[in-house]
Image (cartoon, rainbow, N blue to C red; front, top):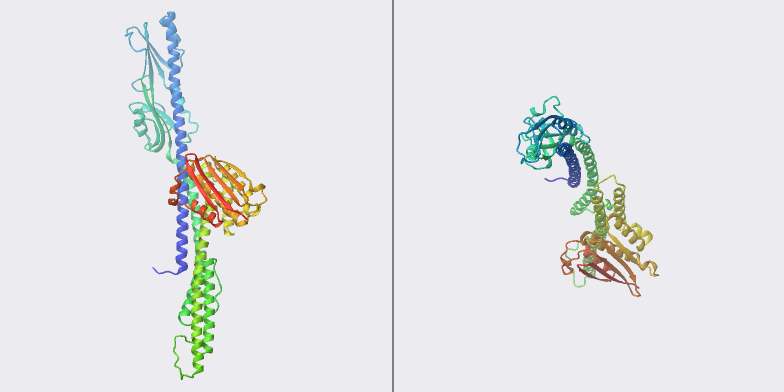
Length: 566
């Protein structure tokens, strides 16, 4: 499909910005959803563990209280009537049975649920008697009914081995618990001895997130579940998602408007040059071309085209003075004495020579322009990596450390500093603190930022600050970038917790030493690294006429740099 350049540029810019917005939206939404689900799991699990602990503690208290009364009765020979009276003082006891015919070798204590799981039994056996105590479930029911922190639909309940509820249902309070069957994934897993927090369908066939674990007390086996409806759980994230969708729509609309605007600005100079090229192809010399557009290279091409048009106009005017001025045409001498013809031919030859020289000069100028452009691109790429890359690395570390709390003031400050650094790069890529206060202050600020955003300690020895030697501005920038790149490499790759940095001034050179206590690397393999870090360091040191050495091992990595000074 053939479309106009401005439409192509608009579509490309809009597509790329839309992809970026959608990726950021998906990552943000996924992170929020994952964080919410994780917190809900932790909360449900904590409540479930607490409920089981309270239930087991309740059962243990009942056992200990009854065991104390029975042991005291056996020790002091308390009669049966008094024993029963003492046992009746235990809360929630429903029935007491004293058995005289029993096997004294039977297990000392056994607990069990009755047939319909509405009561639980304690069977105590001693040498003198066997006593069965029957307790109600009201105290356990009270423990389960405490729903603090579970929202509107959250509940805790217990289920017996026949998958029947043993406690009242929040959603069917009038229904007798054992009439409700709950063969859910949580129940089956807990009865099977497993414990977990996951999403499944509960006894109402409603999606829930539930924590489940088994309860086993001397033969009393049941499943304890703590659940909350998924609809209530996910309602906050759904609300956030709706708001984010609105924001994404607004951003996409703004992105489209910006894309149309940029597409028009970027395409206008090219369209203008195309019209000029069409006129030149028809032999027409157009008027002067005014430079337009924000792209430097396009302005330079426009200026070059404008110079070419002026040259053509001058050639046409000169050719008009010697006739038609067509250099490819031939001239036949009238005679061997045709001085005018000789002069014309000589002038033509001179013009041809001059034209050839001009063409060679233009070719050389273009070659120089291309080389300058390549060097400029290399410089921009290097400085963007050294400056913006370092701040973005710090931003990443802070985001990990802060848990992605966008409202955090430090995060906002870091983003503002990143924007400021980007603008500073646009203004000849000069860090503001370096430009205003010099290298020492810039390094102090860099070290302070690193120590604030990481757990790494930087020991800085600066002899330059107390020396009389003043570094040129360009050397200050190069040294700052070298230190910045070396420290960032240590942060990203060395896994260190301490970095030593020293600047020493000698009579004929300045020495930098950067040492970390990290894991080190194989120095012989540094040429195979794909990153820009070491290459940028090497390039900047080469531009300053310096040399550097790297030593790396188990004790860490050390970089020693020597820069000549006048």
